[in-house]
Image (cartoon, rainbow, N blue to C red):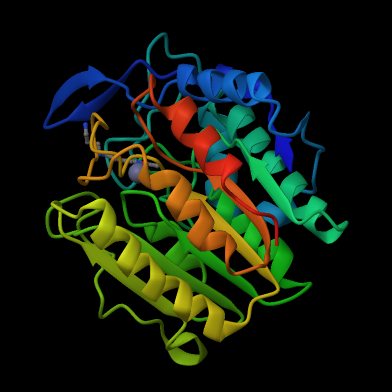
Length: 316
Ligand code: Q9C
Ligand code: ZN
């Protein structure tokens, strides 16, 4: 397995998010990725490789030029403290710091480098992207996300074959869903907490099935907050069955670990022992796979969850 990582993510270091009008400590911090890469190196899970640079046109395929330019310009402003723009933002969970643009570009490069490895014959790649991406939409940042790493990688791969995206972050991947909502060559399947109860609140419902040609190629599995390991694995099997029917050439996994019962902002009733089982179930698809890091905020357990997950993934 290849592991793609760059420590440029450290340049993105917001101190707080605004929750219910109050500044609260930011859960999406550099320590998350630092802990993960350390554990993966310790366990010798694969060759750790720095990302290559890719053309900006890969980003323009998913995000508007106005948005990309806005992010470039505004994250270069050193306001002295975290800065919340009034435009191109969909909630209060995407602060800008001086290095946000640079870090976000490198996160995209990690995802694209991983995707490119699949084209070069690798069967399994893990891209340790930070900041995460699945809430970032065509023209907006939100939910700790700036560029949609998974959508950009999936779109890149889609010129070489059929792509399925499986999003297992606790939160619905609204950005990824909307990027492919009208397409039948990229399937989006997501398991996430019931959006009636949890962020992002306005998307992730079962009746969102896609539009036009894309109708039938968007499948949401909202979960009750009390979902246990067994229930989760059962619903995951239905999601996997949908992917199998689609017969993808490539699988992109948006991997969030905020479904863990001990997560400080998410949390279903999932225990640490479920993650190897989730990995084993997904790897039964026997498909060239890129795993892209999304959420997971229990900084103490995250390295173990990711490492256990990757260790149980049998390359397709
Ligand atoms: N203080 C990802 O997992 N809600 N984003 C925060 C709790 C925003 C999560 C409220 C959650 C965004 C990639
Ligand atoms: Zn999440």
